[in-house]
Image 1 (tube, rainbow, N blue to C red):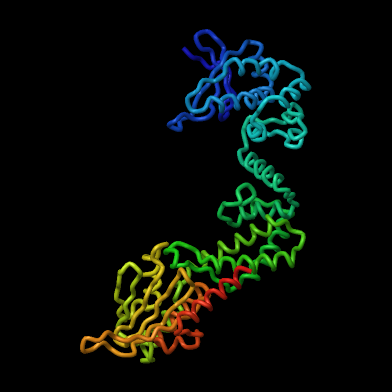
Image 2 (image 1 turned 180 degrees about the vertical axis):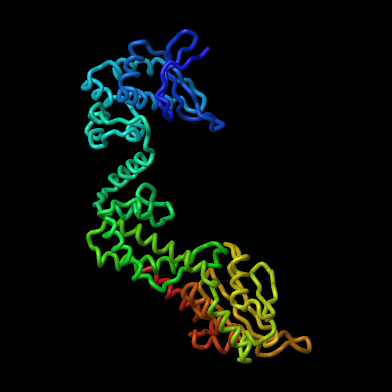
Length: 427
C-alpha cells in the first residue's frame, strides 16, 4: 500500500510517500532498457520530512545529491540505499557551511539546481545554500541549456559580450550551435535589438544577390558547399570589418543564418537551371544552332544506365541532365555523359577528378571498322564550371565548349596539368 504524504506537485521533484507504514522518499530518474523512466525509493524520517516540507532549497539540494546515485544504478541496478540515506542528515539537517563542504566532496547534479533558479555565480564559488535562496518550484529547462552552453564556451576560453549573446539568442543558437538558425527578435533584450539588427543588415548587404543551390553530384538534397563557403566568407569579412569587437561565435552564427536563408531562397526560386531553360527554350523558338534545337540527347552514367531527353517544350536539357545526375550519383558512380548521337559528339563529366572530356566523332564506323573519335580533356573548377560546360554543350555542341578550355588531346599533358593544380591547391 502506497500513499503520497507530501508532494510539491511540480515535474520530477521527489515526493515523500508512506509504503507499508514506512516513510520513503520517491524520485524518478534515468531509464530502463526499454527507455521507460525508473523510480527509486529509500527511507526517511519524520524529521527529514519536516525539512523537506518547509524548506524548498534543502529539498532541491537533496534531489541534486541523490541523482548521481540513480545514474550509477544504470538501467537495471538497484539504488545504493545506504549511500542515499547517508546524505539525508548532512543535506537536510546540517548547517549551511557544512552543506557547502559536503557538496565539495560528493557528486551532485548541477543542472537540476540551475533549472530551479540557482544563482550560477554562487554555485561556481561553492556556496550552494546561498545559491538556492531564490529557488523556484517550477523549473526552467532553457536556463539549464544556456548554462551548459556557457560552460562549454568557457572550456574553449570564449567569453561573450552582451551583443555577442544577443546575436546568438536572435538566431536561436545560444544553447545549441548546431540548431538551424532562424530570426527570433523576441528573444533579444529590447535595448540591444537595434544593434543586433544593424549587424544583421551588414550581413544581408554582403550576400545580396548570392545563391546557394543544390549539388546534384551529391544527390538531390545536398547543398553546394563551395557556394555556401562563398556566402559565409563574404558575410564573415563584412561583419568583422563593420563590427570588429564581435566574438567568433557571434560572427559565425550570423554567417550561418545568412547561408541558411540564402539556400532556402535559392531552393524556392524557379529552379536551379531556370536561366538555362529559358535560354534553351529561346533557342528552340528561334532555331538557333545548339542542343535545344535538336530533337534528342542521351544521358548515361558509369553504371550503364541511359535515358533519352527529347525536346517537348516542358523541360530543358540542362535541367533534365542535372536531375538525372542527382538521382544516380553516388560514391561509386561519378562519371556522367551527354551525347548527341545524331551529330556524333558528347561530353563526359568526371566528378571524382574535377575534369571533363569532349568527344567528337572524326569518322563513322563502316565496313567492319570501328568509328574514330577525337577526345580532348579539360580541367573543371567546381559545380558552377560544370553547369556552364553542360549549358554550353546543350546550346552549341562541342564547338561551344572551345572558350572553356584549354583542351588537351595528349593524356600525359592533361595528367601533368591535373598534378600541377593539385599541388597548387595543397599549398
